[in-house]
Image 1 (cartoon, rainbow, N blue to C red):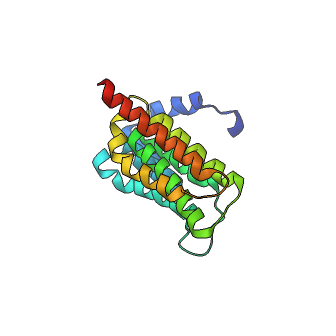
Image 2: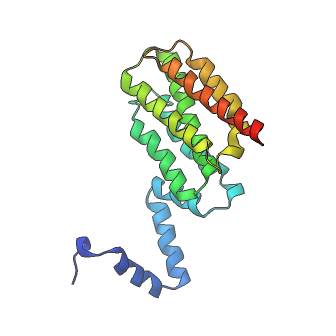
Image 3: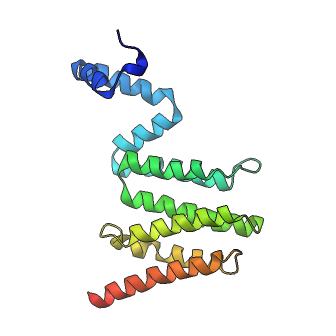
Length: 190
């Protein structure tokens, strides 16, 4: 008899393939009930896109809560906010939703520093890195059609970042200018 630590995906897969539909649904129901993370994952993964807007909002709230918790002051755990983005993306496969959450992260970072003043270098690095990733995705074939929907928010991020310390405002300005130039060039070329 194998110990739990010796069991692999292939062992589980064999058992699941033997199960009937009702058993599989019961297993999924139990996973759904087991944890909030499982519930969000299953909803993002399995629910119809039109019904999934509420699911993405739950992930958005996780991000916002790291910057602005409903009660008290948060610890601002970047890993929690970043995990919300990757969990949503992996579960749903929703590219536009992932980008939406990435920009939400950046917007809340800018709002946070405007609210609380100068933060440390790690903070600005994390927000800037997310904006860089956002920019890279926006320039992909899948991202290009989304630009018009994000343009005003990006311009607001740039404006709100003006005069923020550690060269952050200047760096954001350069990134947003790069995005604008890229899409102006795309427009001229088409």
